[in-house]
Image (cartoon, rainbow over all chains, first blue to last red; front, side, top):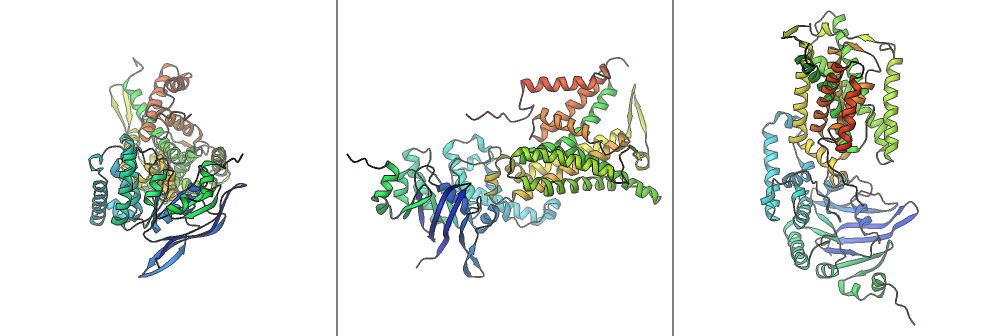
Length: 266
Length: 302
C-alpha cells in the first residue's frame, strides 16, 4: 500500500452563491502523476487554489503528509497561508505564466529559495561568513537548476526577454527551487506545439524521478493527459463526474457528454 | 542677482528636492506593492519632525548637547512606528476589499493623525519653533553671491546617504528582491513562499523611517513645525512620485528634484505664480508621458 501524500476530504467551495467545487475527494499516492481534466469553468484551478491556500474551502479539509523525526503524519493544512503551505512542500505553476518579468532569470529562482535561508537580518547587515556561505549555497543551487533546465545561458537576462518555451521551463524550475514534495502544474502544455508537448512530457517524467516528486496536473491537451497520467479525475460544474485510468475515463459516457455535449436523439 | 538660474537657486532646488525625495520614496514603495496612495504619508513626516523636536528639547532641558545621529534615529524610528501601526490597524483589514475603501481610510488616517496631535497638549495646534541651533549651530558660507548654510549641507548629505542605503536594500538584498517580486506579482510571490504581509510591514517601516528623517531635516532648515505641516509637502511628494512614475524608486527621486527645481525657479520668476509654474510643468509632462518619466508603460488590456 502506497502512502498518501495529499488528502482532500469532502471539500466544497462557494464564491458568493455559486458552488465552484462540490464535495471533492482525493487521496493522492506518493510518487504518482495524476491529472485533473474538465471543461472550462469546471473548477479545476479552484482546486489548485484551495490546495495552495489562496482560497480557504467553505467546507471540508485538506491534509498533507509531513515528517517529523522519522515519523510521518497527515497535517491539516486547510487554513494555512500560501507561504506556509509552500514551506510545507507544495509548489505550483500557473495557467497563465506568472514569472516576475523585471527580475533576472537567476533572481526568479533565488526568490523561490527565499524562505529557506538560514541567516538572520543581522547576518545580512554585517555580511559575515554565515551570510556569504548561505548566499553562495543558494546561488550554486539556482545555477544547477538553470543548467538542468538548459537556461544557464540566460542567467542574467531579465525574464521578460525570454521566449515562451523558456518561460515555461523557468516557471517549473522556479517551482522546484522551493524544494517541493508535491508539484501542481496548471496547464503546463498550454500554447505548445506537438514537439514541445512531447518534450514536456519527457521532462515531467524525468523531474519526477530526479526530484522524487508527486505530481498533480491540470491539462486540456488530451493526448498529453492520457499519455502521462496514471489516474485522471474529471470535473464538470464543480462536481467530480468520473475518475479512473485514462482508458476508463476516455470511455466514460458522462465524460464524453461533458466535453462534447449531449447527443440529440431523433 | 542677475539670471534666475543662479547658484543660489540651484542650492535651494537641490535642498528642497532632497526633502521631497525622502517623502516621495515612501509613497512610491507603498504604491508599488499594494497600489495604495497612502495620503497619511505626509503625516509620518510630521511625526518625525515632532519626535526630533521632543528629543532635542529633552536633552536641552537636561543641559546636554543632543547628538544629531541619535536625533535622526529617533525621528526615523517614530516615523517607522506610526507607519507600521497605521498599516496594521487601518490598511491591513482592508487588504482584499475595494481599493477605494483603503484610499478613503488613508485620508482618514491622515486627518486622525493631524487632529489627534493637535489635541495632545504637549503638541498643540499652533506653530512651534524648532530648536535647530541647539542641535547644530548655524554656519553660513559665501560662494560668490550665493549663501550656503551648513543646514543645507546636512540636509542634502543625510538625504543622499539614506537614498543610497535604500537603493542598496531594494536592489541588492534578499528582502529587496522580495519587495520587487511582490510589486510585480503579489499572488505568484505568495505562492513562492514569500510572506506578503511581512514584506508590506517592512515597506511601511522603510517609507515611514525616510519620511521621519525628512521631518527632522525640514525642522532644521525651516524651523517652524505644526501638526498640519505634512499636508502640503505630502501632496507635493505625491505629485513628485507621479511625475517620476509611481512605483519606481529612481522615478520618485528624479521627480522630486525636478519639482524642487521648478518650484524654486518659478518663485524666482514670480513669487506668487511660482508654485503654479511647477504644476503647469507637471500637467505638461503627464499629458505626454501619462506613466510618468520613469514609469512602466501599462497598456490597457482589451
